[in-house]
Length: 415
Ligand SMILES: *Cc1c(COP(=O)(O)O)cnc(C)c1O
Image (cartoon, rainbow, N blue to C red; front, side, top):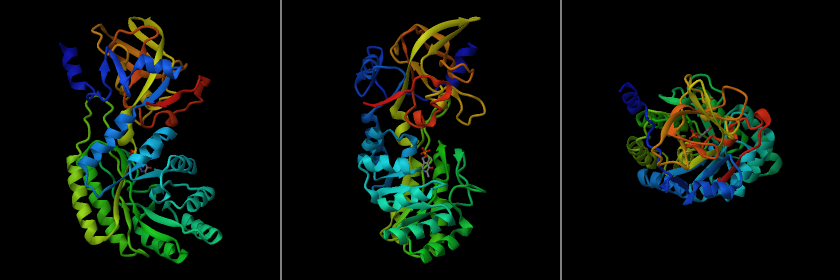
């Protein structure tokens, strides 16, 4: 049958980090309906501590022992989750003064916190210097501001240079380097910036390169790591002090859409192994760092909404839920895709039901954009059932337009 073969080709990668028992998903060992009762409301996001821990452990097992793994907090800045991650990883990367506060509250050591972002305000730079964290400088203006802050506060200003390289990360869902970019300083102007850092008396510690995000092609990531390393090595010749840290960024993707497969870590591990050995020669005593957001937390989270209506319009089933794009913008399709694709969606309390149907899942917002699943095969569901969206641990709630249409806000739990 035409439809069967089509489905076989377009299936989602297996989404089974959450076990199923008695037909229900379990999050941190708790059946979904019971967790919903404990939370006291839908919609909500649930993140599983055990899965977060497992993810970091399996990544460490695959990559070189000496490699430092940082968590890029903007993927999910929920304070309890950040606290959990801070104890597992080697450092946190923050992108604002607000994230810096959460990182420090969560127990991160200032030594192991770094701060990147194209528009750091004077206030945030001052907070960063006072905190003693590493600032990835991205402009000549930042160097001048830091020089003033250093003199005024008598605190050391620790800096690394964020380089906008002259190459891109191939196959990247979101390109953050190469060509004209607001991020970092163009590689060709870095020697000049390094001289300014030296004159300003800032503590130079190394380089930061971040080529792009959401990449599922291991070879492309390994290639970007190699090029980043070579560029850093060339730029180090102009540095005012020895390189102590080299942050090669990340960009590790996770599968969301039909046909996508989990990232193969083997080629990346081989490359990082080679680069760690070269580091010992080229930059004795320096640490090699990668920073990951989505890859560490994305698969450990679910978004849960309750079905509040079931409608049939001209033969098509619509499941209307109390949650939607105001909490989960990316699942609705505003994710930079040209053609909208379905996230992995399921009826979380009917995981083993043999009664299936094709249904469209929508939210309560009065806009056709509020679409969570478009004509997907799901267990047959009714009012009161729980729709779950997998792969929701990263860029969920804080990346969504929560005030849009004025519906009730969402809560997050770490289980
Ligand atoms: C957003 C960001 C990250 C995290 O990206 P992911 O795709 O979530 O891994 C890491 N580093 C920098 C500088 C970023 O801006």
